Length: 304
Image 1 (cartoon, helix red, strand yellow):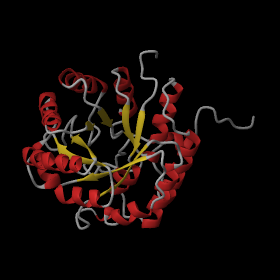
Image 2 (image 1 turned 60 degrees about the vertical axis):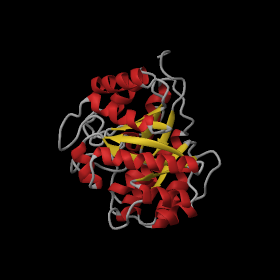
Image 3 (image 1 turned 90 degrees about the horizontal axis):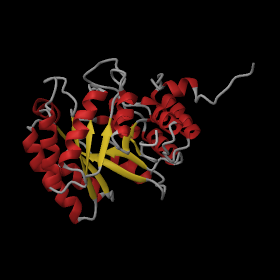
Image 4 (image 1 turned 90 degrees about the vertical axis):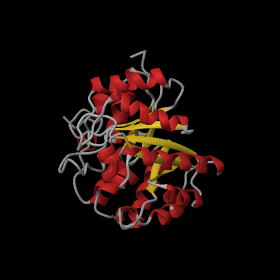
């Protein structure tokens, strides 16, 4: 355990990546959830996504949500942008952290944004430049990093090459996304190892799904490799559109519960996060997959 990071950074992605995969919820409910999450001690929240409303109606109120939330001084808020137009809207709204996404799988990228991977990388180079000119940072998320629902396995060399192009164009950090939960500990070691060999000084975030039950095992493997930056979603909120009925993101409270017991600090109040997960469950109107939400932490006892 002594070889693990002493502390990790957790980005809460439920308000964006989680709600984006659910039926649309009222704007006031989104704002209430983000405000609740802001009080848990989490240091970063992916709040909204600036996308075309007709494409993703769940995020149609992004600008209003961003303007109305109570922004905690201790929290860094970010937005996902799919293209130059979305980046402009986010920057005009005052966001100073944006995330641009590209799929390592060319087929998935075309299905997602109707263009090839290289075309998206060209676009992202301009987004990075615009962000920097306006005093903002831009993380590049490489999705389908551990596999594509259309192509199957994506070669590690291709994933690293796509990430390397973004690094060369000035990306402030890289995130590898396990879009449909195809990662396993062995594959995490392979990709993180190859990326670190090529770009040891570039900040790395990992975004795991629990679609096939390996989410926290992948986190443990990454921790052992020294990775200290992870995405998670309150309550396990969200889903996987390419695996109907399957769970999506790893649950924030489950991540916190596991790593804190291993001596890895998160700065997050577990009880407050569990309460936020209960709120999220009420907002969605169905049972969320988090087991820690159901059972509570191991320290919770019942009368004899």
